[in-house]
Length: 245
Image (cartoon, rainbow, N blue to C red; front, side, top):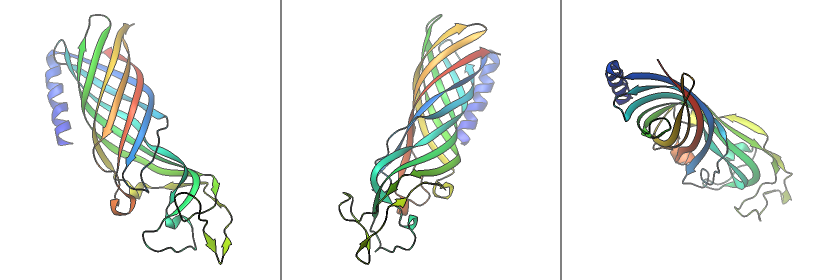
């Protein structure tokens, strides 16, 4: 975080002899949640909201510095037969390390305020082609887990051994629930991002279209021994407008 503030201070100093622009953007994020244990792996991507504001400090004809503040929704979804937390079903006790399985939809939603500081390289006269990359730090705004569906419970990952109580199969269990998981997720996340875009003058400013990859490099769980280790990531597509101040 200290390095980000240093870059911001230097960019403001350099902008005294350069050009300062401000911009806004919005689009979609296709996040991915990467895990390494049975409880936390196997998540697929789903579309989420993305948008933000930024400043652009022109340092040279080709290079600018661009600090941003973005709302970025991360996470992922997992459908079908999967392990469930033992505390999700009351009245059932299993040996340590043993999982229960059920067939349901499970979505983890992690909303962050991300602050990247990017170096941007642009070429072209009217239509400009550019690339940008740099580090980011993210602050957790909301973390929740949404589940839905009804399913019988199983003792194996293939769904062939039903859980029984007194030799009787249990009725299907409802998984329609939303759970606050803020306590399980670290409040700060760090990573790097980079992208490619096109920029074209329209009116008093420029419109741009950009594709960007966002990669988290820190484990997000506060209790990795129980929940496993995950990193966030996403592919972002956005359109925006940039004007000179």
